[in-house]
Image 1 (tube, rainbow, N blue to C red):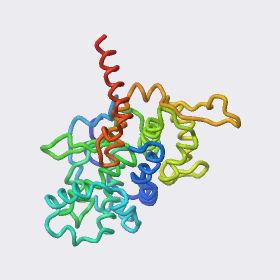
Image 2 (tube, rainbow, N blue to C red):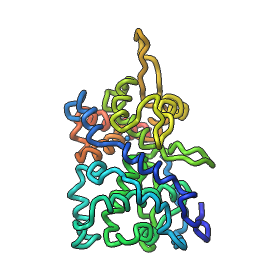
Image 3 (tube, rainbow, N blue to C red):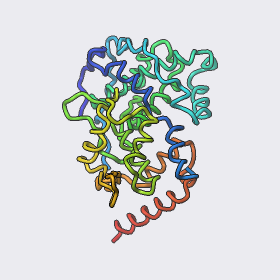
Image 4 (cartoon, rainbow, N blue to C red):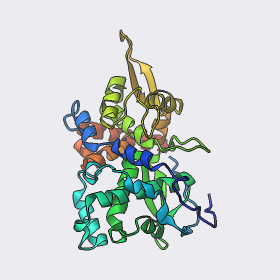
Length: 321
């Protein structure tokens, strides 16, 4: 979709409510919680991308610093909570892009800039527009020298919470686009309506299913989701009714299969990968994502790694036949 010649004026009444996004980040996927849950049963252990516009046109909004400025007043998830395990990489980036005084900036101040940039990224994603480095620097006005660090943390939140990759698509003009992770085509945002990408929740559940031996009981899935602030019967600030999302929306989209456990009395239910999940992504891609969350390598999960390799080989043979 081509970009309009004039970018919209960003203001809080048009973008995502600041409280909604920043509060939701507090409920975000906690890699440590996921790791603890998966480790409990595994000792060694959230196709077509969204197409970016063809041309990169810097938006240069008249007053971009006013974009959701009220979110400055909202306390967000601390940097350490959502970026545990990536300290060395962040230190390298902040050293090269933020200057020698980066450590003197209060963590809360940088967190607020990260929250603002996440809001801006979500706004651009929902508008199906590219974003420029220049625009992002205006959004975090006053902290431009820390752009590398803020951008890295915001991109990680987009990846882990919303299941979206942020990639530079025009290195000359420094333009960035968004792509749904793992080859999935689902984001859960209804056409023409406001919403939040829900792919992160789907990826999390697909990971739990794989780590649990390709089927996970409803109880096991909720145990993991509860650790991320998602509870059955409680409306979530970002994802709405989680039970409906998981047992109806994901099932209707054929990403999950939800069925009664055979011979269970009283009746119990379990989740499996749906046909669309099998068609669009692979066990290896999901395992690579989980390994990244844990700051390790896919081979650190031997049984799952072997199974994922076998699936890759089978897919290769199927394509060649």
